[in-house]
Amino acid sequence: MEEIRALVHRHPDKLTTETIKAGNKGYGAEVTVVTYCKEKKGNDERSKLRILISFGQHGRELITTELALRILSILSEEKILPSMDQASLNSALDKLVIKVVPMENLNGRKVVEAGDLCERRNGRGVDLNRNWSVDWGKKEKDYDPYEENPGIAPFSEPESQIMRKLAISFEPHLWVNVHSGMEALFMPYDHKNSTPDGLPMQRMRSLLEEVNQLHCQERCMIGSGGGSVGYFAHGTATDFMYDIVGVPMAFTFEIYGDGTASSRDCFKMFNPIDLATYNRVLSDWSATFFTIFKLVPQKLGDSKASILKLDKLVSIDEYLDGYLMERRNRYGKKMEVLELGMQEIRTYFRLFLLSSVLLLFMFCSRISKSKCRPIVSAIPL
Image (cartoon, rainbow, N blue to C red; front, side, top):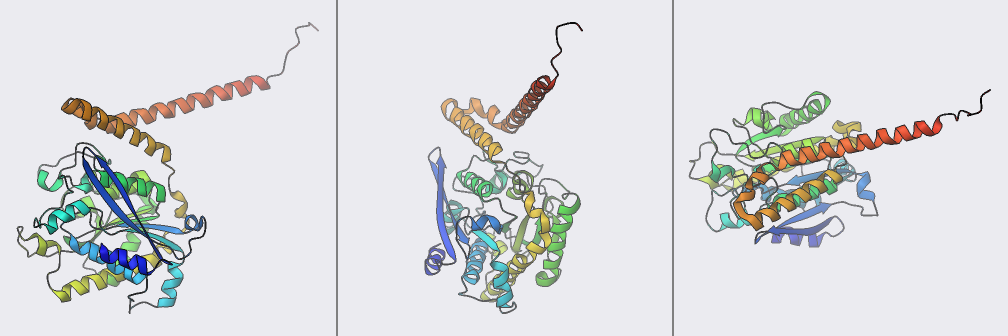
């Protein structure tokens, strides 16, 4: 992270950084966000296409943060992409605001650097890519708590809370969650064997197929995460971004994997171990992302306007999260049933609000109609 901070410091005209902190029950976390935007005048960001990319959600996937550094180095023009015309690339970048989270799981990364090379969870043993609310908490027959612990409730972890607030406030048009373990280009959904219907799926698949041909030489797997990877993942970030935040294009990319590595050799399984492979991965996948930066505006077209306005829903979620977490802290495990029912509570609460709005609308309509009725004279004609 020191290299990234130094890079931002050298290029204040293009890059800015902020560190967001959160915590609960004595556990604290921080997430650094780097923003690329050439012109920072007033509300200029809102008129541009917005991209949010997260790296390092799993601690053992070190190569992903290296890719984040490479992408930021190219954005700052300290490094170049020989395969791309710089003028056309700059023209495309002028229309974008890109937020990069280089290391979402800083605490988990510290555990890995301390010697536990197989650790993917955060600093208190929760898988951050199972801690989101869409289909949260479901466990498959092969569920492994060491690998997939979803936490005590959706968004129980500070890292997930930070990322949710970031996504809701930024309203990205494109989301990519970058992992390693294989080579793949996944679209929703992770929790079931299906993809979104209609035009959204066609746009996402068209983009991924073009990228696969240009940069993966057709070797990258394409499809839904749940239908392609061999297992269902419940409570993932990408499913939340697509279903709840309303991101028009939401992806999970897997950028490297060594299928010959022993299950005990996690470093080799998830990260290149020789310099040539390391450089190839960074070169190929940085080129992939910059191709995407050029293609996404064309693929999205008018769908940029489809971002949902969910501030009120999120405030309800945060209220319920805080209330239930406070109750659990006070009363202990007796409150776990409420935590497990959090999604149902949210659903009923939203239905209550919706029905209240409808009743209010009907009431106002009735009043309006009664005011418009002609006054009939009481004097007989």
